[in-house]
Every structure is written in C-alpha cells, then in structure tokens.
Amino acid sequence: MAARILVVEDNPANRELTRYLLACSGYCVLEARDGREGLAMARREGPDLILCDLGMPELDGYQMLAQLRAHPEGANLVAVALSAFSMPHDRETALASGFAGYLSKPIDPETFVTQIEAFLPEHLRLPPPETDD
Image (cartoon, rainbow, N blue to C red; front, side, top):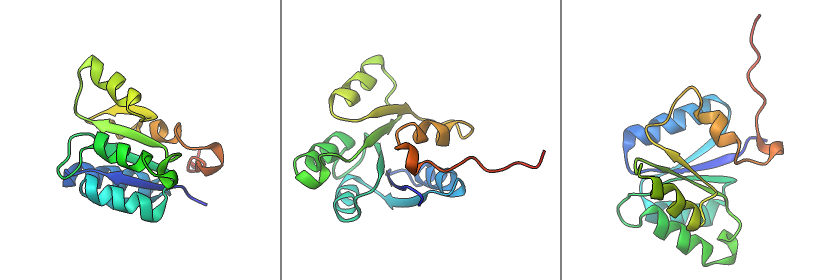
C-alpha cells in the first residue's frame, strides 16, 4: 500500500510540482493550500507523512505543527519542513519545533522523492520503477 503524503503549500506551482513528483512515483498525495486547511486535513486523514511549507497564510508551518502536536491524534505524525527560508538557523529552528527534517526550496526533482522516502517507514516506501536495460 502506498504511503499517503499530505503536501501543505500555499504556492500553487510548488504544490503542483511536489504532487506530480510524488504521484508519478506511486504515492497517494493529499493537498492543502494553507496551514489551516493542512491542519484540518491532517486531523481528518491521518497521513503517513506531512510535507509543510513554513511561510504560509492563515497558519504558518510552525503554528500548524504546534496545533497538531497539541492533540493526541497528531502527536506521532511525521512532518518535514519544505521552505525557501535558507539561513543556517532556519533548519535548526524547524527541527527544534518538531519537524523530522528540513528541505530547502527550490527542490531538486531528480532527488526529491528519494529524500522524502527517507522519512517513511520502510514498509511504506515504494520500490524503484523497473528499467528496461
């Protein structure tokens, strides 16, 4: 069974690219346009992984994760920050706030799915596509 990955991103182009890369690899992708929508969807759907922008309207990524963690159903959800914030302390701040990882934007389409799979339990990772050699 493919992992269910929630992408919380306010930029439509970034959200579409992320969805496309994950869906083409066989993952089930859920999408939210801002932190408030992401919070509601995470609570309702209980995804296997959340990819979350940090700078968003309504609720930013930090606020969304804090509200998720405040309830038992969100305590164990795995969330990875995806952000254009690129100062050295941004990564440490995200990790200290409860994110399991931090990836900078723009993402590299060649390595993105492999980077994301590192945050999934092995049984939820999809095998690489077969190639005709």
